[in-house]
Amino acid sequence: MPDIIQLLPDNVANQIAAGEVVQRPASVVKELLENAVDAKATDIKLIVVNAGRSLIQVIDNGVGMSQTDARMSFERHATSKIRTADDLFNLFSNGFRGEALASIAAISHVTLKTKQENQELGTQIQINGGEIISQEMISKSTGTSIEVKNLFYNIPARRNFLKSNTVETRHIIDAFQRVALTYPRISFSLIHNDNEIFRLPAGKLKLEKGNLKQRIVNVFGKKINEKLVPIHEETEILRIEGFIAKPNYAKKKRGEQFFFVNERFIKSPYLHHAILNGFENLIPHGYHPSYFLYLTVPPKSIDINIHPTKTEVKFDNEKDLYAIIRSTIKHSLGQYNVAPVLDFEKNPSLDTPYEYKNKDVDSPLVHVDPDFNPFENEDRTKIFHQKKDFKPSWESLYANIDNNEKDDTSLNLFDNDLENKSNTTFQIHQKYILSTIKSGIVLIDQNAAHQRILYEEFLKKITVIGIGSQQLLFPKEFSVNKNDVQIIIDLKPDLESAGFQFDISKNEIISVKAIPASLKEDQIIDLFEMLIDNIKNEVPNSNFSQFDSIAKSLAKSTAIKKGTKLSIKEQEEIVNNLFLCKEPNFSPFGKKSFITITTKELEDKFNF
Ligand code: ADP
Ligand code: MG
Image (tube, rainbow, N blue to C red; front, top):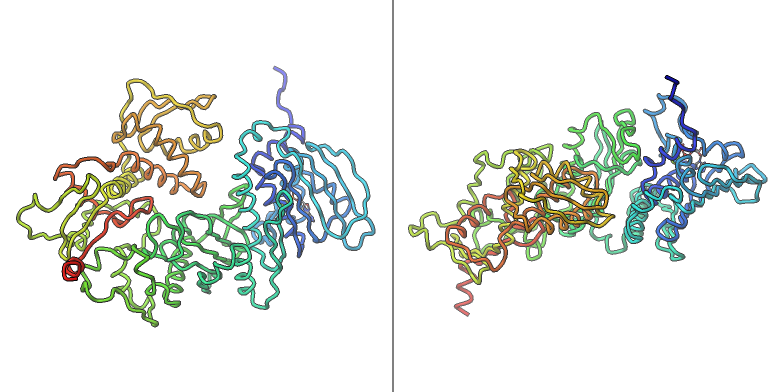
């Protein structure tokens, strides 16, 4: 047999590498902006045309490159930023792999113009699909400009996978904002299709924190100013700086969650959870707090090398970081009187059954306490929050739902001493369930409440127990949008643990063979559509959010709808199960699941 193994030609190897580095136009934006920062630029301009499909250009006033370096920069594994493997553990630059320019050039038309300060003339290089077309001397100001045109022109599969211009532009803006928020001392601008979308002047204040605040305001608008609470903590293993938004400004959509470690934007579902936990239940379920947190840790204690696009890092001491972050958030919320000053009219999350147990109906619910500090007085926070012990991972949140962890307070909500059980609930217009409580009456939205019950059940089953599945007699087939099929492919393992079995054919036909036991056949298509929608609005690559989306979608499709008549027994089951939930106040989509009217309020109405 002849030998058959050969080394791949460089341009092929680069194209393959490009698949990892460049997923979409926003990846190019990120790499080019980071290169400009690494080149010590103080002014960086990003120009984008047609959501990056036609042009992505970054112009900087950094150190520039020599003629030889300009050529070298497009070689794979060519970098000026590290020399030995040891340098990897002491990184002070964004880049280090030396792959970005080689990868980008392999799949687009690139023009590089660059000049160093001490040079008379600069260099211009044109590269198409990794091949050098021309190199010449040009006159140019100090710095570098890189134009990337016709991205993915030679990889149609990639090009076809791109989402709509709106979506791709959104990703570009995200990438831009992340870099801009990392470096408040650098001025940035973004021009898209000739419109200036951002002009962010360089911060000139002595205090970096002031610059940061100004940058956040310039990026997100003046209104955010009043929402920000400063964060500061310094321990032996880390320093935290930055801002969080007050809980009553939490949003339904995610988007303003920024977490930086040693000047790198990263995603960490684990530490995100620590932040949420710091907010405890000050935020209704389904809402997301905004935060801008900057961590500094010893470079040796993190490994940023585990992911090619580098938004994930590995920490040596994740558990300690979790605890510190959580308590720092709590502390700041307490210090700035945010926790107790919430507007109760507007914030129903605090309208929990606990108040009925612990407080007189008549007394105002909360007084402003300037000395409030959640650390000193844990008990006090318990009045407002559901019991939630420090549990370091999201799995454990749902792991012990049934350990008879019956919340005595929620049981006490109801008149246990009522003899005649059949009279305790009443259905109104096939929409609401009325029941009496000690202090008055409670009206439950049957759909929202049932969604909440099912959601918590599904989440527990998917993550801990596993959902039983039923085989279909005939596979159910339907087609999904070309752009969305990837979402389903990504979700497949998670959907399988939720009881689905299905195949995906080449022409985007999904053929479902088995479904979770609780689902009906005619709900399948709705469910997939909802799922795709939910996933699009969540942060990618977080397992938790995927399970969460599946559980939410399942709950929504299978919950009892409005207009369904319920037997007394069914009504009671909803009432009882709702108040055994961890977060009974809201449906998984943030809709109120019940309201209460106190006897006092009723009396007032009659006595008017
Ligand atoms: P990396 O950033 O990982 O080193 P890149 O492929 O992004 O790899 O860049 C290769 C090299 O090209 C960099 O190490 C740097 O020396 C040089 N370079 C890239 N962009 C610029 C720029 N805007 N200004 C100056 N030098 C640059
Ligand atoms: Mg780079």
